[in-house]
Length: 257
Ligand code: SF4
Picture 1 (cartoon, helix red, strand yellow):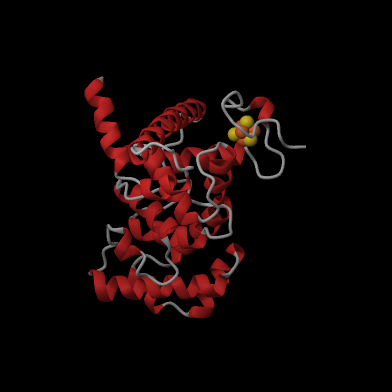
Picture 2: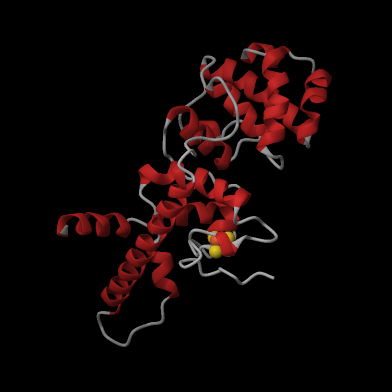
């Protein structure tokens, strides 16, 4: 137990501690840094324990949630579906990809696709001109730089036009089981704030906080479980706090009209 806690402390020390320490008031003692460090670690461990408890309760509610709801047959199709999911529901994306994946199979098919035809198919997902451009660019880059294989690092994936960390994380975790970060979409942002996981507003900073709070092997499910809970219970306008499994732990419970 002691060893486990020690390991946890070591891991925490490697996080954004300098930033946290700067925000604390200056203690009068000469060992100010050590005191601040002690408080930081104590606070963080408490927050981690509470956050993990919340996630475990949410997991019990959605035992069926294992992977993204975006339908795909291979990593390349998942990359396309994730590009299409920006500002669009998974339900609509799945409807569109049913037709799209039937017509185009390989990266070459997309690279050679007639732009107008591609745009017409994906139009219901919104922002279809940009999305068509991103999809064609992704197919071309896959052929040219990656020998037709979707790369397995955030650095490589975010080198694709229109692919940011969220898309890269969705692809890495769902297609390859690689936890390099937490996919932060609008549901994850909203719930992370409401549940007190972060006070940040910036997506990348929120992701960093989530990566600090949860063990690496759970980063994948953090995203998928918060999305599920955000869709069914903690919805944007009128969250259903009265039926929420974590309402006794949530700092925002029953604070909405
Ligand atoms: S208690 Fe309310 S605000 Fe908190 S997670 Fe549940 S539904 Fe969302």
